[in-house]
Each structure stands twice: as C-alpha cells, then as structure tokens.
Image 1 (tube, helix red, strand yellow):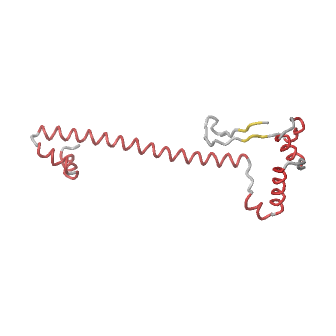
Image 2 (cartoon, rainbow, N blue to C red):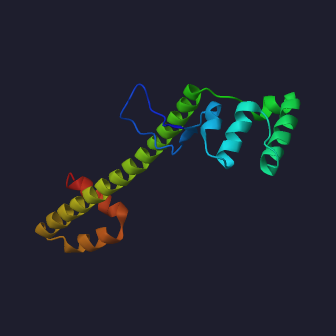
Image 3 (cartoon, one colour):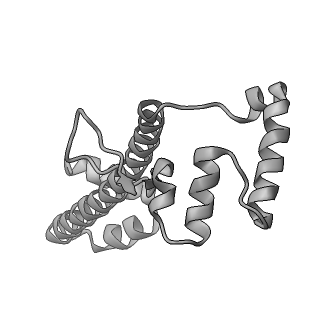
Length: 157
C-alpha cells in the first residue's frame, strides 16, 4: 500500500490544503494478505472474479457491468483525469480560495487603518477648533458629517 500526497512542482513548499489523500493498493499482491475483506477486494480488482458468498462485491460487479455496458453514461459520468490534471484543478481552487481570503483580510486591514486615520483627523480638528475658540463648531461637526468635512478642508486636514 502506498499513500499519494499532491504537491506543486513549481512551488514545492506550497500547501494547497485540499485535504485529499489517495491510497494506492497493489491488487496484484492480493494473495499475500491474510484472509478477510481487503484480500477479497484486491482479489476482485486483480482478477475480476467475485469471491464466493461476497454479497457486496457481487453488487459492485453487477453495477460495474451495467455501467460498462452503457457507453453514453460512461462518457458523461466518468471523465478520467490524470493526476496532473487533478492537481492543477486542486491548485487553481486553492489559489482562488487564497485570493478571496486575501481580499477579505485586505478589506479588514484597510477599514481598520481608515478608522484610525479618521480618529486622528477628528482629534486634530477638535484641538484646532478649541484653540481658535470655536467650541460650538466642535459640537456641530460631531452632529454633521458634511460640516466636519468642510472644517477639515478649512484646516487642511
């Protein structure tokens, strides 16, 4: 048995985080296993012969025969991807997820920076208005975003 993990050849350290793991079983060595369900499954895969009294593998075999007899169904439902094609698809999905996550993080950081800038601007405006004896304008600016913007322009903030 072998385990296959997908890796990006162009960026070896890139973890696409897809969560997929393929397990590769060598069906040709079925006869080296102890008797049991795995041996019966691998024997079936290797030989195509359904072990006697195995209801599940009998059902699987019947379904496989029906699917293989229906060429239109196979064409529509069973597109085969190479490992490379599948890896490219998974990498593209991960890349798009990463871009979306980056946009969200950027928006959050940008909003936080904007809020901080607005606080500093308002504090500076209040200080200047108070220094000029315009306490009434401080109250009015707090109540009117339009007036606040005009006063910030007036003071070059």
